[in-house]
Length: 159
Ligand SMILES: [Zn+2]
Figure 1: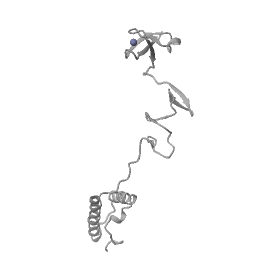
Figure 2: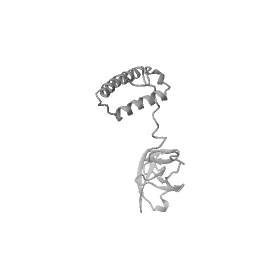
Figure 3: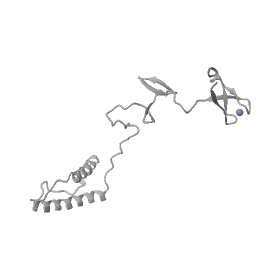
Figure 4: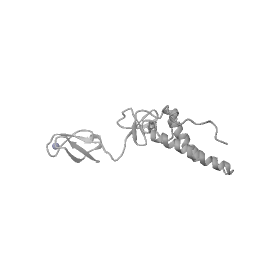
């Protein structure tokens, strides 16, 4: 006979009983107070049912599981395999502070100066990391309608 756990809400106590599997669902009298105690569902293994062709935990609450986290719907748009829109919410784009805009303006001036010197010595080289950082900041400004916060500049670098 398997061993089952029962919980008495009156004593707030757990006790174990050997019971035939066919009777395991029935309430059992608490050895302390003799009130009926409910069986505790075992937690060391998971039980599953099938819905939409996928296994669901019991009780099936109509939810889905993503990487061990409960979500209300399956992934319904393109996403990386390990991501779920309810869990991996995109951070809202925040407008840069005026200090950040000033720092970016200063940086563009400084880097343009470096570029001009490099061009003059025929040693100019593209810098993908720098371009990426610039682009990220410009995209953040554009997303927050802040492009006009930048210092106005001429379209072409000085020759
Ligand atoms: Zn009891």
